[in-house]
Length: 221
Image 1 (cartoon, rainbow, N blue to C red):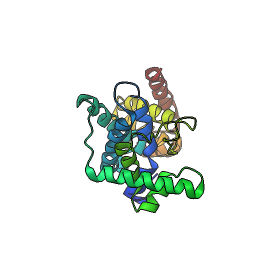
Image 2: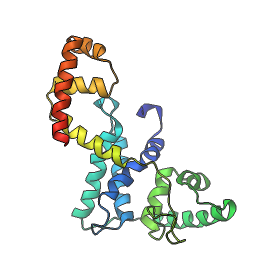
Image 3: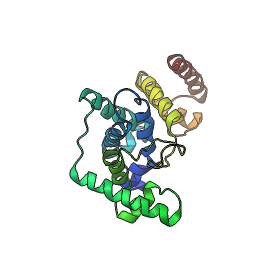
């Protein structure tokens, strides 16, 4: 995903699943899920605004630590999230529009559908639901109370955890080894192309790559 090819709002919408994955890691630890989600959304916005494509790794790898940082800050601040009056008002409008949508189409609306009907962007809608409408949980199943609903989002849980762990291990490599791994596994280059870029032979790249991967595997187990 190339950030320059999509808008800021689209980048936020496409990565809302990262926030859910990070928030789930702290569920049941004393803070309501909706508060965890809202704090994570703040982290996602910061990540989108500060991400640079030339960093050499994917957006999710960059965003997860930022999102987790905002959620952890919530615990340090005593679990409080400031909710503005305007955000609460948006939440009430969303609840009303949601009821209208269900009566009209006999199904739950998505974040995008609610946003289009109200003229909000997708992040504003998700944030207002989380902050102002605790009875409308974003995490319940269809078997739960009728007063709650589930917003469909991609499941990034497994990839988020692995991306974060791999990124931490890559940071421990020396600069040349990091560049080899970046070109092979993030830029999608062949061993021959990587060898030409690094002034090595294909055989040298192959051998060094195996050594690096063996080291990384030992740190990830």
